[in-house]
Image (cartoon, rainbow, N blue to C red; front, side):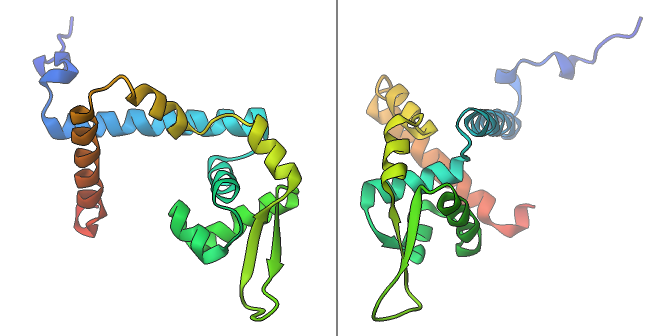
Length: 158
């Protein structure tokens, strides 16, 4: 009978920190993917579409470039998201009367109704769960994730 090497019997807490972080990131990505697929299946809308719709609902009429900065999506990605929201009748695009290059995006009545009956975004659920964690721990988590994002943003890591 073949024995399992000692290293394979390690618990998560005994792994090197870098591996623990990678495992945690994988689990986070799996949960995000699950949430996204579930949202699309049940409500016919993707997470990026819902994020954009909520942003327009909360902030009001805005340009594509402003929305792009608010939701951290590139303009090229955002155009497709906005196209699909417009096809569903949830938002409307209108050109500026003074500068035809400027396009304003606004939520429609149907979009407002959708937001009022749609599921909460994942970050809304996270906000609720964070309320039970001490503020010092919240700060530690946020700072650690900011640092991790900064580290991963360096192209030399890939």
